[in-house]
Length: 581
Image (tube, rainbow, N blue to C red; front, side, top):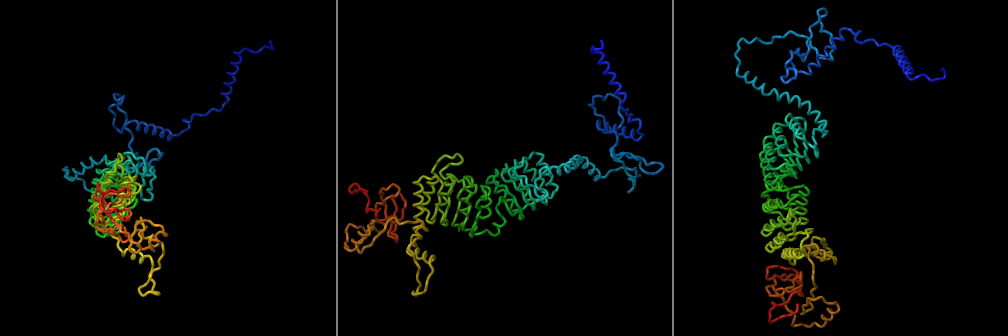
């Protein structure tokens, strides 16, 4: 039996005995609660009382508590534990200060006489009522003052630089509550930027009501938000009462023309406001410049209303540049009213806007009666589109073309990059060229040379010119004109056809006269070739130019200029007299 293995039950019993011996041999740890003094037990009981204080309200039992029918509990500890002084030392009792704040018990100090009468005055009664009403709000404000510092640190919007740049931040209702709190209690914030935030009219009304007594904020920016005319009314009310804000920006919002009038009316009652929506209204009111330039200012219909009120009737303004803004059909009427009020303006730039077909229709009656503007830019305005549907319609440009029949002062009308029908573009160019030709006479080219070439006194009593062969070509390019033919005068013969130099020389030698050569004079009835389709139409000669070209008027009223002799035929076509054009 010595070589046989032991059964499993005996092995298990040996393992158990071995474990018991090991446990008995381990160090015995004394009970920690036996060696501690009375202070430890006092501290432990004190912590238990604190836990009970957290579970119940101070000295009030919750009526909905599950075990409210049981016996009353002992009252909770007070907020401040007042310990009596030690009899031997006269000092406060030594209790752990980290558990609860301790204060030494002091005898009350009598500072005034005790009231002898029990009657309460009206002032004291009112003060007690106000205390009862404002107690909750005062408690809330104390809590907000602690939370707003954490909110400012979370925003990290530059409060250390005395500004809050909240652009493109996702703000909730409680964020606007804390912003209003900061404005109400005059936190050191000089600039508040809420651009590209979801700001509604309700949020603006909350901010405006808390900014009325603010004496710190000077710049308020609300660009590209959801503010409408209702919010503009709240801001206008704020501007009338707050004379600290100097800059206000509400561009690219939901404001209309009425909202712009509301803001500029409030500005008239507050002289401290200097800038509205990027426009220096204070400077424009006191000393407007001759050249008003607001290129790329992101101006819309509300800003046009502000400009109209500020610049109305100014006689010194000669140029108005509104290139590359956000002017659309809704702003066209205000723009026309502004241009009509500027009697001396000669140059207007409205390029790269969004006037569309409707805007051109509004501008056409103004151009028909205007007598001062010489340069007008309507390029890149979608003039062939009805906005916002973007349907193609040439009604607006046709109205402008008809208006140019009566206009005698406009010399340049830029209509490029509008996808205009070629025929309409040619009509406009022809009618504009008439206005440029009316002003030209024999002295214009001489004045042009005087401005280009200096006079020299050598060899000439009255001075001379240093000329070049390209001077006349430069002059024509400057005036956007061109020569369609070359007229040759060879003695008694007048010929308007393009001739080879050799042929012209031989004709000059022969010096023959031809009876068939017609002399064209003013008021003469002729057939005129229309350059668009190459056909002849009836009309008459309006004027004979210095370069021996002709200005003609068709029977429908259209005027064409610089017509060579080759495009004229005497008389009107009839059934009796016909010829091949």
